[in-house]
Image (cartoon, rainbow, N blue to C red):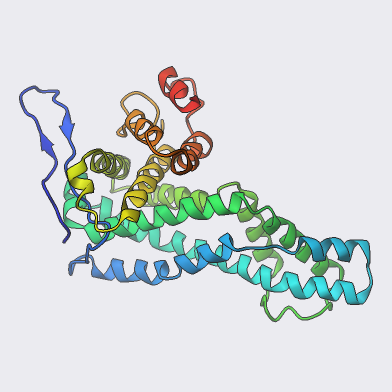
Length: 327
């Protein structure tokens, strides 16, 4: 079940007392219970490929040199050389896109378990830690993938060249390494990679679709679960005793990224977002914690809050939040 230290404790001394979030989420060793197992195993079948997908995007070299040569010297040998380099790259691009479709499929199943039923958000976090761990792994994957993708403009250039070549010369070379990419699939892949943060878009749309398709589950169940999990991550990172429970140093970085991912996802799903007064997330606390981190660790995550959230620049975002993130 995980190393649960204590439940969410409320100080009942006043009617409007603050909440203290002291749940230890075991992101390292949480194992599924019998009631979690069916969804857990389905999600795990998808997640097992996440590292290899990240490697594909992180190590993507591109075919810029070969494409430039093919444009400068439109002779068969040079064209064929460019094509032979581009096809395996397009196969990688396609694999990443198809992984996004698998995420799109399993995220609603995961949210159904974590947000449905009669349990409070904290009870879900306490009793379904294996599923919480999987949501954390998805969020970490999404942030990493989009960060790598934004640094890799060659993906869109290579795919554009592939599409132009296919439309001009249907019989050039062999596309065996790519498989059949019909116009509909090619259009969907182009739209996916045209977005600056494509995996976040998939995740936020899958979450929004889950909310729309499950009218019996109030939207507050979903947003409060995301917000509560973000607060728990923040409190864990602020508490040296809880940090001391981590078995691996990388877990601290994971929880940091997950906290940011939850704020961003909350902002995309909640009608007024994460920055408005009364939101169920502690944006100020998250930003201050990030600013206390080494710059190399903090800046990518601060930039994610600055540039991939939905409501930051709206009028109802308090000025102190805008100033804090502008620092």
